[in-house]
Length: 121
Image (tube, rainbow, N blue to C red; front, side, top):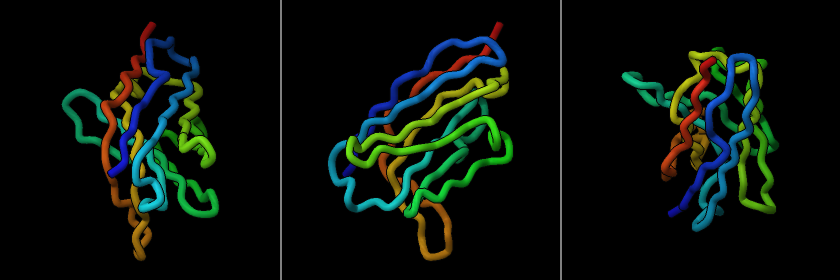
């Protein structure tokens, strides 16, 4: 099993930036992809960014061009750089170490506690 801890959340004004980090430990070798999810109040948790083998990245339309996912394999850490933040980006953000299956679908693994991001003036 993989243990995850997110950090870097907080309160930011619209138009600002934040960088989330996620440190992983445990059975990381059993995974082949990383993802960032978010869950806003009253909404379902959604996958917004993922990175898989060969550093291929995919983004949800809502964050495309504003968010960037990256990883440092030596440190077992994945990052989410968030720029031009909007109030609708307010949510709890979760990182995930999972798998991309043969059909290209991301399959989530264990969850961390999440990091609150609030975008407000």
